[in-house]
Image (cartoon, rainbow over all chains, first blue to last red; front, side, top):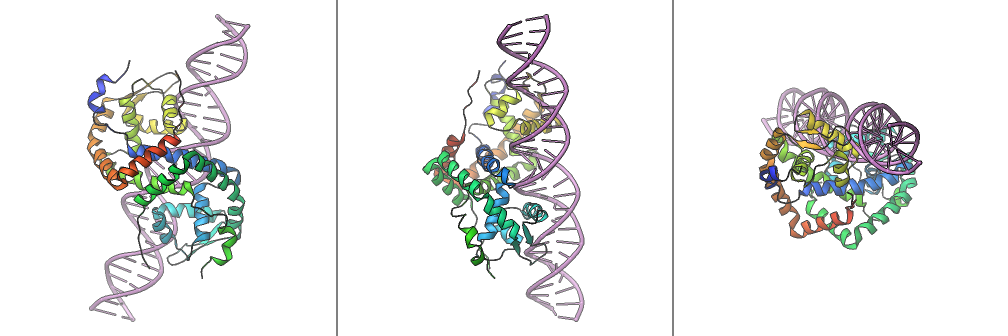
Length: 150
Length: 150
DNA sequence: CGGCGGGTGTTGTACATACAACAAACCTAG
DNA sequence: CTAGGTTTGTTGTATGTACAACACCCGCCG
């Protein structure tokens, strides 16, 4: 008993594939691959991304700066940082004006995870292909806001 | 006090931008736009996507089929369906072999949300550009598994 | 110097997501 | 028809994400 017939009216409202659905699928597959590879190291790709962003930043960052740079809600970052602080991987940034620091333990863990990250990066790059990587860069350019500020 | 100097060793492990970080940013921006537009209608884009997928499917689906098609974990889909069932928007699919149905109320809500969805779809398409849409399609092709089955 | 408005970090709530584990239903070999 | 492996849907737990609301701090303006 197919339902195509009785839902033609609704189907007409859904004439093209939802862009958000595509982005969600891409997210599930790619982030899932990284998280699986990093799991034995005790990190998610979101956590490693935060550590690496802090470690390679060219200036000291407060949570609000980081949230703006990553186009992420302040409250989301706050929870993520709370998890990292609880494990002693980052410190600071816990009151207005205070900047974030990666602890020695945080740096060690990031180093430990680097090879798993790189392997997944290579595998994902191969899956997406050279044109896929260019496609992703294009999308990121279209979606990135540039909130310049002192 | 910049931290570039003391972290050069770690920075060397992070020579290229993380692909997962890019995908996560894309996800935050795009899905966030859809969710914001749909919020007044009482739906998220994940929920609307499920409703529309069921309404336009060419065959009856059980949760496991849907999860495979969407490359989504069974348990994730189970929670999403539970929310929709609690609101009386879908029915069925609650035991092995049973297929999913969108209720009249579910259909009504999907219809109500269609204009907000379309407006966001148009706005997002403009933000990404024609080449951006092609880029997203390419990425989806590279990432989509095809689990053929009877 | 004092107020006060905006920025900051957190917390309550809710949703999307996944892994592990489970009981129950299904299906096929015998 | 039965037995045993497989599939299925759910639930416990954990993370990532965002909105609203909050208390707090800081800097500026009078």
